[in-house]
Length: 219
Ligand code: GRF
Image (tube, rainbow, N blue to C red):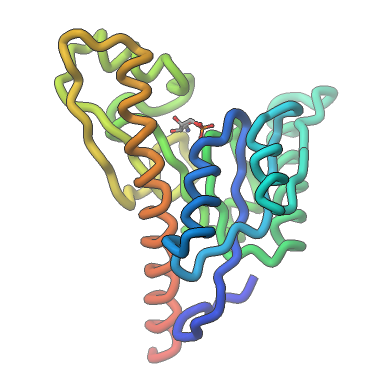
């Protein structure tokens, strides 16, 4: 990782971690192709699930795509660490400056969280801190929002820390919750906003990393 990315107009390569369909990954790939991703460049896509369509999206875009699966023979904690360590090695090899979790269902643990501190971002389909935390993923989030009678929901891009969905918030986008909403209709409305938010989140992180480097350079 090149810690001094500021100033230079050079590209800023990053890795995207996925587990499923990968529409957020697609938003990043489309933004890169159309020049809306600034200096950002998807260097590597990693899936922890075999058959994730996101891997196909990566290949179709000509990106390096890896399957790194959890070792089911290991107990939970060791399995998370082992997966995280193997992901970290691949990210390092690709010389990625930061990591985007775009629908990534495994929990990262251990060294990767220190090495890439403030350099891992996640997108979550609610207005955190509401409706986040362990077990809050997929349609469960939207079910909970509807059950709570919320009138507004949305999505959050945040920095990843040791907790689940707890790190500092980079940005949020809101949508109305309509009286006739189902989990599907609400999920779809939020998904649309996610595709904007994830691109803005990457741009925001690149800008912050640049500012951090500037402060370092002048202190
Ligand atoms: C998104 O709703 C994201 O917020 C959550 O997982 C979903 C991934 O969707 N973390 P996709 O695979 O990018 O379509």
